[in-house]
Every structure is written in structure tokens, then in C-alpha cells.
Length: 346
Image (cartoon, rainbow, N blue to C red; front, side, top):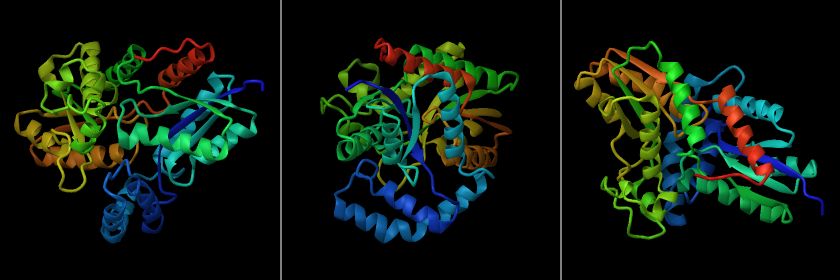
């Protein structure tokens, strides 16, 4: 069979509309994912269906309503714009799918199949590896491939948290957006995950102690360690921007429940930095490549309020890479490398 290559871009997803009725099935699919809430299925089902889905949809719908665009959910709109630009930069078919929601991975694979594609480069739009983001996307894509398109080849692109070309694009994007701000501090806020996810993702089962030292000690565990990859992204961008160490820090947002999550917590950092004398805080969210609820509402709106209530004077949310020409060009280069079988993973 003649080989025809294609590309599958996958991101998180979104409810169809910012209403409790539409948010509920989206949250159910998301939270029942065993790689998001990694509890035994009966306990996960009780927690999600018996408790969370009875209270959370209305609150989440209100949050989505605050950031919803006329064209639709920002994450979807931006992802579609990114994909259209990417199609213009490559001669391969490119399909867009979402891990959760109605823009399914199966439909995206079907779109490629209908164009004769039988060899696919999977691009999970997550710079860092986590079982609740990168891993669940890869697992789902392979499951849908096995069930519906068994003869289709798949190649998953690695997390790109430390690739020099990605760091350069991210650093230059941040530099352009903070130029002239006069900010006192740059905070890298990453999406949080439970600490137990770090230990579960450790193939050695002993390296990851989450004590601050293990991330700095070379290990095969770093290939799947979200915390290490977040810390590394922060430090590499700091170096690229030539910023003093005391003017840059990282934190983790969006924790859920009473379990221990990665620290420091972003909301606590807003308070700490304001009380420490930071007057103008700039915040970047490099766990995401496209702006979404977690960046536009949790950081740009709630975060601003938290920082100012703690005494901070000025707050700047730095938008994600989104569909910037530099980021589109970077991904197009990755695709070109794969086409010619010279792709290198950092």
C-alpha cells in the first residue's frame, strides 16, 4: 500500500456552549478519565457523578460565560485558526481533534482516512508531559486508531518542553509582550496536578521525591516528569531572556480537592509576591499553547483580582502562543522534519 502522510493536532476541548446543560457532559467525560482522576472506577464514579456534577457545572458555566467569544470557545477558535494557518504551511492533510467534547479524535482520524492518509504524525498540543494531558491524548488516539483504523500508522511527537527551537519561539514571544511593561517579576504559572501523578509517572518508582533536588538530578524519570519539565521550561526561558533569577519564579494553578498538588500554588504566590513588594506582576502560562478557561478566567481575571487585593498595583497576563506566525512556523518545521525522517526530539 502506498504511504500517504498526514497530521493530527489534538488539544483539550470545550463545552459546546457556556451553559450548565452543555458543561455537564463535557465535565463528565473529562473527570471520568482515569488519567485525570486516577481513583478506582467505583470511587471515581461516586465522586464525579454523585458529587461534582451536581454542583460544578453551574459554576463552570458562569466562568466560561466570562471568557466566551462571539465565535465560540476561545480554545476551539484559536485551535481552528492555528490549524488553518498550519495547513497553509504544509502540503500534508492536517486534521484537528479534541480529547474531550464533540470535536472528537475519531472524527479527526476519519477526516484523515477519507483523504487517503495511512501514516499520521500525532501532535499533542502540550509542551510538558503529564498523564492527565499528553499521555491521555496519546492513549486515546491509539485506542481510536485500533478500533476504527487498524492499518493506520501513528507517530506521537514528544513533549517539546526543552527543544531549543520551542524555547526560542516562546522566549521571543514573551519578550515582545513584556517589552516596555516595567514589570517587577515574571511568574510562570503551570497547570497543577496531584503529586501522586508525578510518582505514578516515574518509571524508576524511586527517583521522584518532589523535594526540589530530584528535578536537578539527571534521570530517565525526567522524560515523563511534569514537574521537572515545568521547572526546565522556566529556567531555559529565563536564560534566553537574560533575566535575574530573583525576578522569575514558577507556580501551579487549578488544584482540585484536598489531596496534595504540586507547589507552590499560583493563588498563594499572587498573595506572597504582592506582600513581598512586587508592584507589577507579569504572568505567563506555558503549560498551554492556546488561551482557554484556565488562562483567560482563572489567571487574567481571578488572578488579577487576587494580586490586587493582596496589595499589588499592576497585573499583566501574557497570552499564549496561540496562532502566532512564529509558533505556526515552528510546528510546520517539525512536520517537515518528520516528512523527511529527520525529526529530532530533545
